[in-house]
Image (cartoon, rainbow, N blue to C red; front, side):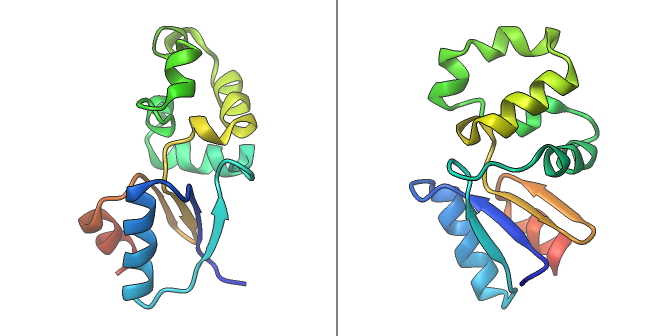
Length: 119
């Protein structure tokens, strides 16, 4: 089992670029489908800490589910626990790709950031 886990969605261009980049960098990783197996509450809390507590950065704000649930308006009043439970229960709401490993937590794909964190 690899020490890096990346949650992806098969139809996501950023996810495909991230996986291609991980392969090109020669890094071993486990890929998990984010819709079928969303990150756990513990993994989400790890990512939240890496995002300096900005819960909005964990949400796929451009996704249909986010808009349908009107989370743009609801999120500011939501507790951290409520937001984490919502994300853990619906992988469509989680920003992707979502990568965790020892000492690394990255959400969204930015090649320079990933190279700095994983290089």
